[in-house]
Length: 88
Image (cartoon, rainbow, N blue to C red):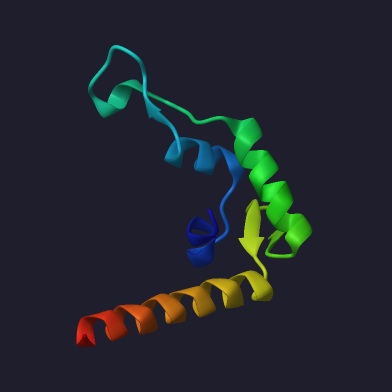
């Protein structure tokens, strides 16, 4: 979820659309269903408690500087370990 918030602020309704799936019995995208708002809300509340996300006035939730730093550090670690594995 932090990756979704990295680029721009996003609200719960938009996240419900992203994490939703297909309606039972249908194949096409037009028959899609939204994800659970309660689960998304709880995850975002936990991230707010941890200090990685904050609520904005109009745009929903956005990353704090510590949240952005966490993702940057994680990406750097993955890139470093990937390059080490490539060299072996």
